[in-house]
Amino acid sequence: MPLLSLEKLSVSYGPIRAVEEVSFDIAEGEAVTLIGANGAGKSSVLRAVSGMVRHGGRVLWRGEDLRRHPAHRMVSLGLAHVPEGRGIFPNLTVEENLRLATWQQGGARTAERQRALRRVFDLFPRVEERLKQYAGTLSGGEQQMVAVARALVSLPTLILLDEPSMGLAPKVTQELFAALAAINREGVALLLVEQNAHLALNFATRALVLENGRLALAGTARELAGDSRVRELYLGH
Image 1 (cartoon, rainbow, N blue to C red):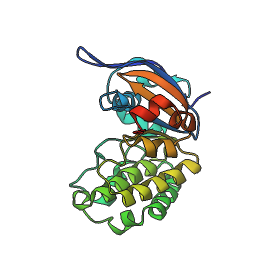
Image 2: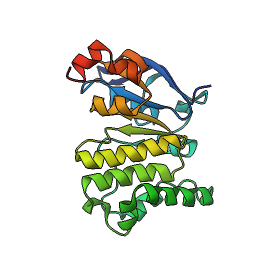
Image 3: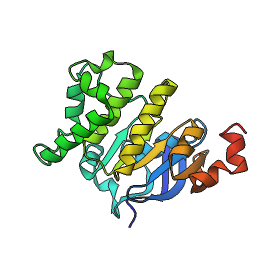
C-alpha cells in the first residue's frame, strides 16, 4: 500500500480550477518532485494534501481518506508541511517555534522527539546556536532551516516542501538540500515543489510535471531530465 495516494484530486478557488483530476502515489521513504510553471497548481496540490484547502477527489494516507481529519491533526498522523514563505512565527524564539511542532502530542513520544531535536542540531548547527533568538531576526536561510527543523521535530513520515530554495543564496541552498538528502536517506519521504527544475530533478528519484493544473508527465527524475519537452520548457535547453 502506498504511503500517500491522490485519486483525481481537484482544487478550485471560486470559478477558477487550479488542479484538475491529478492522481499519483508516493511510497514510504520516496523522494518525489512536482515541477511546473508558476500557476500550474503545484502549491495547491500540497495544500490539499495537508488539509489547507478543500478539494474534490480523494487524498489517502495509508489507505485512509484524509478528509476525515482536520488540518491541525495532520501532524499527528506523520505528515508535515513546510510552506512557501517558511511559515515560521517571527515574534517567537526559534525554540518556541520548534516546541509548537509537538503541542498536540503532549508527553507522547518524548524520547523520540529529543532524539529528533538532537538530529536537527546535527543537521542545522545554526538552529541550535539561535534557539533564544527571535525567528524574525534570522536570515532567510536560517529561517528556512528552522521551518525544516520544525517539521522534523514532529516526527514525520512525509514532509511536503514548497519552494524551499526560494530567495536563498546558492551556498545556503546547497547546505539545505544536503540536509534534506540526509533526512530522506533516514527513511522520511519527501514531496518537493521546487521552481529550480535542475535542482529538483537532481535531487528526487521520481518526478511529476503539472501543466495548467493537470498531470502532464511522470517518470523517474532521470527520464524527465532527458525529456525534450522538459528540457525546453523547464531546463532552458
